[in-house]
Picture (cartoon, rainbow, N blue to C red):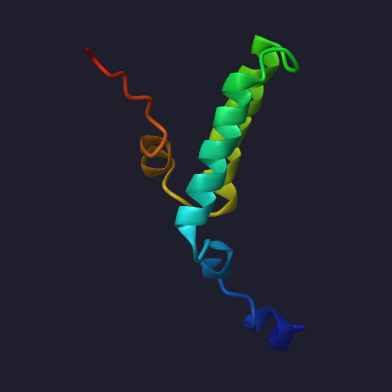
Length: 79
């Protein structure tokens, strides 16, 4: 058992995405879908799904939550 335990990376570096840009792109697509799915998913459920994803993904991939959320800030264009 000790030999097997020594093979486990204590920092869980293997869980970090190698292609973080792909992860961010897929999350942007997911958030875009949630914004446009007003007929299929009600507002309360959309907000709960988005909140869950914003909390779960950084924890699962051991990312900094503030840096992760900063990639998805909505920018309002002024005329």
